[in-house]
Image (cartoon, rainbow, N blue to C red; front, side):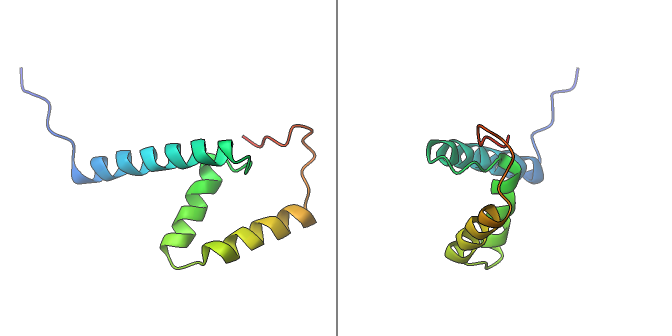
Length: 77
């Protein structure tokens, strides 16, 4: 029986990225940001591609002010 092949570099990077998003989601939950994993992933991608974190936070706050959710709990997961 052949031994399982080692994970590829892409698999290792994908797993590391997932772990980072999981940790960021835990922090975001503790800070009551109401951002889900997908939204955090978009934010990380934007920041990695040069977006200003402060400007991104301002945009999120402005969008939330203009388009309040209908949820009574505020939890959007």
